[in-house]
Length: 358
Image (cartoon, rainbow, N blue to C red):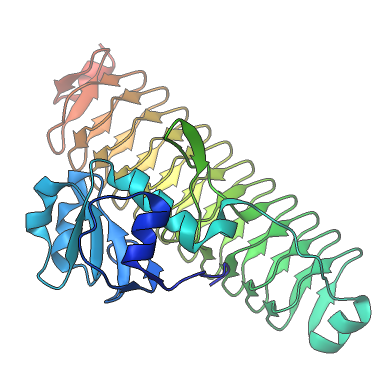
C-alpha cells in the first residue's frame, strides 16, 4: 500500500465525521475497497445498477448503496442506505486516505553512494532521484533525471529512460519505459459534494506487466479504489493517455495519441492505430481492431473480432456484436448484429462487401 490508512474507524465515528445519517448500527471498519476486493471488515459501495452482479459475491462487511439495491447483498454484508452512494463513499474514503488526493514528492532521496551500495547490479544516469523502499531488479538501467518514488517495484532487465516519473507503480521484467513518461499519478476524479468540489482519493496502483514497451511521454494514471493494469507483452506508442482504473490485456498494440478514459477494460490482442478516443466504462473484447480517429463513446460493449474504420463513431451504451465491421465514417446509433457490417451516417446494416464500393 502506497498511502497510509488512517483507520480503523468505528461506524459511529464515520457517521459523525462524514455526516451520513442512515447508519443505525455500529462496527469497526478496517479499510475501503472495491466490491470485488473487499473483505469482512471492509466497506465498499455500489452506485450503478450495471454492477449488481458484484454485490452477489462481495465479501465486504458493509456496503453503501441505494435502498433498492440492498436486496442483492449477501447476508454477510450490512447495507448502509444512501441517496448518493458515491458521494458518501468519497467522504468515507477521504477519512481513511486524506493523502491519496494529492501527488507529493519525497523529501528524501538516496545519494549516489547509497544507490551504488544498495543496487549493485543497476546502472544509474545523472541526477536520478530514487526514494527509500524502492525495489529495483538486476540488470536494470535508470536514465538521467528519473524520479522513482517510495514503494515502487521495478523488475529485472528494465530500461527507464530519462525524465520519467514513476510513483505508486509495479513494473514487470524486461519492460521499457521511454523518455518523459509519467506513471502512477492521481487520476482525474472530482465530485461536487455539498457545493464543494472534492478530489476523489486514488489509493490504487499502476501495474505494468512483463515485456511491455511504454512510449515517450505516455501518462498512466493510478486507480481510485482498485488498480490500473497493463498486461504482458503490450506496447504503447508515444503520447498515449491511460486513465485511472483502465485494464489492458496481453499482446495489445496501441499507437500514438490514443486516449483511454477511466474504467475501460480491453481484452487480449487488441490493436489501436493512431488518435482513437475510447470512452469511459467501455468493454472491448479480444482481437478487436481500431484504425485511426475512431470515437467509441462511454459504456459500450464491443464483441471480439470487431473492426472499426477511420473516423467512425459509436454512440454511448451500445452493444457491438462479435465480428462487426464498421466502415470508415460510419455513425453507429444502434446495437449491431454479429458478423454484419455497418455503413453510412446514420449507419445501416449491410451484408455484401460490394456495397462498400458501389
